[in-house]
Image 1 (cartoon, rainbow, N blue to C red):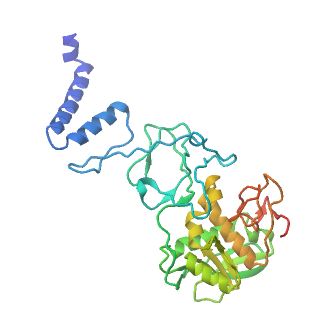
Image 2 (image 1 turned 45 degrees about the vertical axis):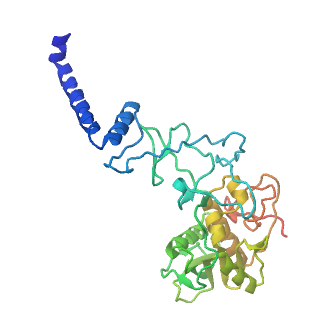
Image 3 (image 1 turned 90 degrees about the vertical axis):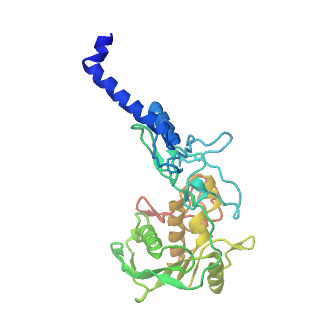
Length: 340
């Protein structure tokens, strides 16, 4: 046996193992001991990820196991979405925290990567061991404080956009965000354009086209993202009270202005979060709903339990037995509910 170990392929393997073990032994004698121990443990267990930096926490693995999509014990999942519920309460109950307690997207409570031992490392990145597939969990809200007031002035997107829609009259719109809101005007503008482009948006009917124009160009209306106190002032000037429980809560349309409340843009609404509805879907809804008012459409009601809510339903306040829906056209046809 000793002869076999000293010659042939076994000798090469043994030499390799000795060199690796010698390297770890040398690390253990220095101040890199914690990093060496972490690396050994991760190698033995087929670990997730490791970075090492002497005398720092840069290699600290922060594991955040992800539960199954059915939600935590006692929780109620959302049929049809695959996301678990887990946030309860009303308009003021959306104080949520992202990975590490910092600002960033917040996924469904208890949401999961099916069958995968997933984890999040410092900074929020997801890593997995081996070739296990991963799934990105849609954000339900954005963590961190939301400013109640900005400077009251607007910053406009200076880019022109493509014309959306195949036929019909053209409505020109500008896009702006309030200074002091912490939002990027181009990012907001791109999301507005995506909502208005569809498929499923107002241009799908063939009787309307929409085109984004720069802030200094002639326009028909402006889509603006503003803090809640600015939204309350602008909406009140247009004859709309957006308060719920004394707090400016919803968005609105005033003459020539589509006013999106920053609170809703970042936090969505409690019943969407509970149902696991992605924030992106709520944002698409609020743009199409308020632009719908600008185009002359009035509020509608839920047409029946379990059916999609019409985009002109006040989904920010209630679903009434319907399911969340951000589009005025479904399967190529205008989808509406009973007029209110």
